[in-house]
Length: 281
Image 1 (tube, rainbow, N blue to C red):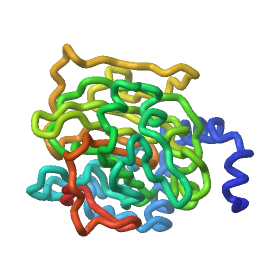
Image 2 (cartoon, rainbow, N blue to C red):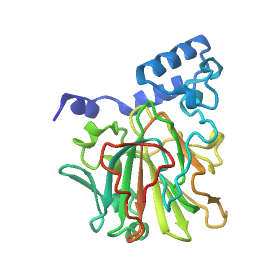
Image 3 (cartoon, one colour):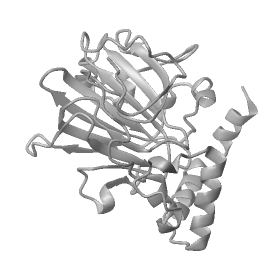
């Protein structure tokens, strides 16, 4: 096992993440601007796409990190499903019964990913999945792959391993053991689908546009118990391409679809860079 993976088992990941989250929300004036400038140079962030390219105007690092894009920066393909994020395709394909491919010699189950929700997991037996990794340079808001009505959301506590490709290749059940937020939707055309927002080391929190806590943030608070919300009586409908959430620092989105719903675009392949709005299938 690589030393970088052994180290992740040893370090206090949650404490580091809490500290990183506090720093990212710090209004540090010139210090914040200096950190943003370093980050842009280090990760080659394209600020020409940002709705506001003036880095000195961002009060906190998280304000910069979750910056919106200019209108029409990501045109939407005319397709049944579009990519919901900027990032890279980690893996995609068919779910074999309830087994999802993570990396060579590693699989995880839809039941574990969905925190033991058997009724929901059953809907994705022999369905399809896509796993999308967001790197530090990427736009970190998450959008809808198709029209959907929100049915439920669950916050699932867990580990905070990195979710980069090297970690995915070496840590078993990575996406089903990390902290995550499971969002269930119903589509008139495509049935049930879920979007799982997976946390990671230094991912301070995740937010959804419908959540009613301060700034729509789901975590913190963190805890040891699963928290669930039902929206069956709310009629929250989001259109294809509409924003549904964001990562405060980066991570991964795993999507599950019912059997027969999605045939992937032939241009998709693992490690391929992809942009919000591109055709999925």
